[in-house]
Image 1 (cartoon, one colour):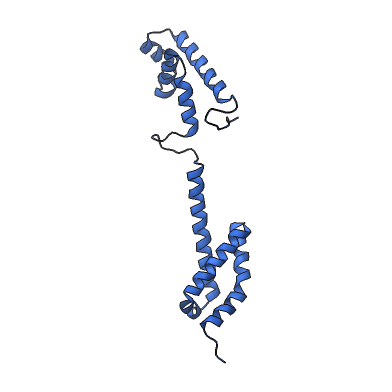
Image 2: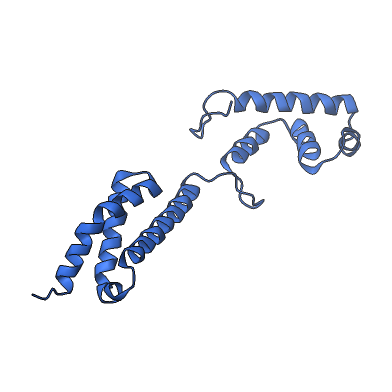
Length: 169
């Protein structure tokens, strides 16, 4: 009695399903994810069964598909995580949440301390250059800088910001 493609695939399925789930579990570390990946692998194997059954090693073909699926999901999840919880983005045009908090706190400072802080800490002028530009004494500029930084530090460590994000310790 001759077996057809359906029976051959059913045998392949029975012989390899457990191993594919086990491999996927070792690669991804999640049981449900492993089951989903093995199912997708076997679905693709069935869709291409004519070519797969003629392959010298159908099991290797299926493992390669499984690996590609695992890798694709890992990359997609990594991208999703980076979009949902972005690490510090190195792009001066897009400030992160902490930078927005700092900007909000700086904006709440009195005009002269705010100007001194920006000129010194952002622009990079020395205390003497800030004093010269603001027509103020160096001691006054140092005082503004010290008090401004302390005010911002207190605001940042006050527990929970208005933004709803906990302060970094």
